[in-house]
Length: 560
Ligand code: HC1
Ligand code: SF4
Image (tube, rainbow, N blue to C red):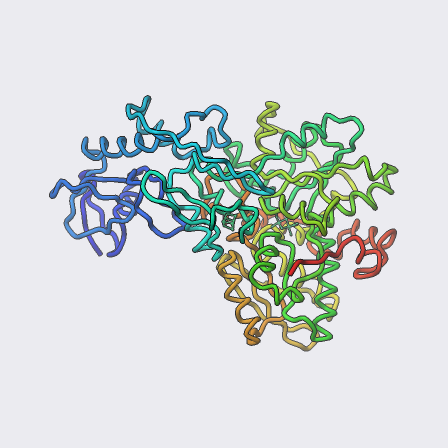
């Protein structure tokens, strides 16, 4: 270990620790911008400078390793002036439109400016006037707001293995852009939005559909149904100051009703439906030893990544539509008929933790299913706009029919959940025995083996696209031992989605995941095939899983 002094307090840390980590051990908060706990170190913004008292040198604390006997001051006047100057230089060429900015209130540059007591900027910087890329469908890129921290570049390369973003040009003209400066919608971007979750400013944000949804709600000719994705139940509260992982399902239902939605339903219902279709599809493939490993397809960022990078493996993807798209298809067919509403009047809004769901909605194979997708953050904006006091709302229930859910559908929102939900149904269907505990955690790749009807089933779960590639390379090479692979594009699954509340980190995502697990554990029905409304849907309308009616409504194709 290494012993050093920071602001007069002695601290002992492991060799190789950084000054930033050592200071945090002592509870000393040094501001940072380019640093992100889940990414590699960069050290470019120099907002985290501290003074090495013996040499008088300024060190970027996020990248400087500790040395024995060091004396560090985080708040000497030299360190404070340097830190302030570095932030003022960033502000000198930053647009001054905080009031109307998407990240007003959640911008890290704004927070640091405030915390450092910067009330005016004395440097007259030249402002950039670069075009905004809002060609969509998921993300808006506003280079004028970029502070070149490189977090988006790093997450896209290190966590996703996509490398759709890069630094281009030099000096004052440096920007983060796509290859050949093409619109983000025309490159290999998966639309996952991880870049937007690590961006400290509004240089990367989702394309908002809030105005479209307000217009639908105000249109008397439309019957507006809303579905809420599984993972939102344990994250939406963060937007209102609640602890990550707090279950707010009841408050969310109440808020949606106050916003004027005609029916409040849940994607959890459709997740159960996906299990019925996809579970039976897997059983068919497993028995026939065809297209194995079976790979899940409910995550649109993953599907896009697969289409770009592994088009040769598309036959392994489940043909089942995602729960979101299944829900929308059922809302405009079965629900419309049962409720005696003209399907053309039904407007389906999906609240998703995800930016890629905006892309999924626009896919030509799924055209007409979902009318609007709002991220968790966009829903929070609507709730705030009308002044609903979210934290004091009394719990309300989902509406009947497409509001019926199980614990299996709920855990879809966290890594491993789709696999566990599928196996609960598959195992019972094949050998009549309930599934034991899979004991899944949070690692980027997890695996499990289980005995089903006298045969071994090997499953693997990947979250984050770089991890998915490792499993996919084995499949391509013909040496994968797995029968079932779950892929979620975002770290930790949908709880870590690109549309979730900010800021975010591994710890926050894990708390959200535990929130979902707690819903499952306390649910009286925990298996998709036991959802009473799912049974009724098959009895009254669909017939059987993988039947003709299901195939037409609930399955899709992919593009090579
Ligand atoms: Fe997801 Fe899914 S779990 S993809 O992470 O299969 O977005 O929450 O809604 O469709 O159910 C997202 C979450 C979500 C779908 C389901
Ligand atoms: Fe990369 Fe995902 Fe951002 Fe696209 S959305 S640039 S894939 S991080």
